Image 1 (cartoon, rainbow, N blue to C red):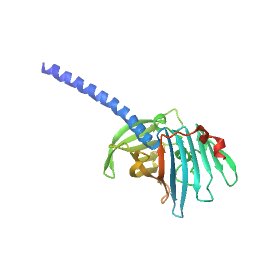
Image 2: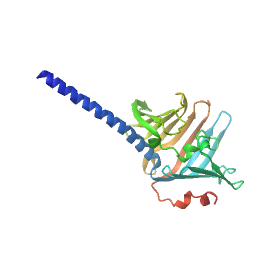
Image 3: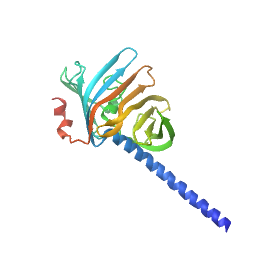
Image 4: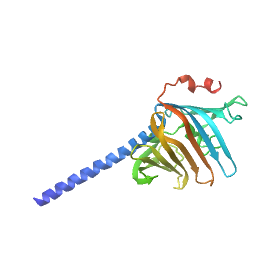
Length: 251
């Protein structure tokens, strides 16, 4: 009888471990989805300040932004004066830049999506949110870690084998108490840390608890970093399809 009970308990234990494993795999994806949705929403409209810091200079830009998920984006630079009126448009897999001083529109090829956007440590892909993390990466919870005294899930994202993705892997830290992103580490295919983004100044913005400051640190260029600061933002607002058009880009 004792042997039967032990065997039964062992089987129950194995079943529990199996389903816990499935739950963790599902939860990793759900955590990323919730964290990303906090920052994006179905749509959003806002004003940001970008500060580019290098050992030789500091440059500040202010811009208006319009986003519709990962599909559409329009960014209008308001300052400094020499760049005011420049715009970036993304629709689907296509991206254009409009330069006001020369009144020219340049189409950005896919090969340039990982190039620096306006000399910052953010890429074109970062700015227009081309990459969909849940669709382009597999996810797995690999541990827990405290950041600024708050316990976070550490989620590893590995690129799917059928997609051409530049990053070898990502480590995404999400706060357990509110699903707010805390940090993202970007590694190359050799496992070297190339850059990392820290989220700070967490508070209410646009009716959500989100980080107001996002700082991208360049790990291969000492002294280089770029900070995004939210001046104001609204989520899930109606946005006309006309906003995301070449006519609006060149207006």
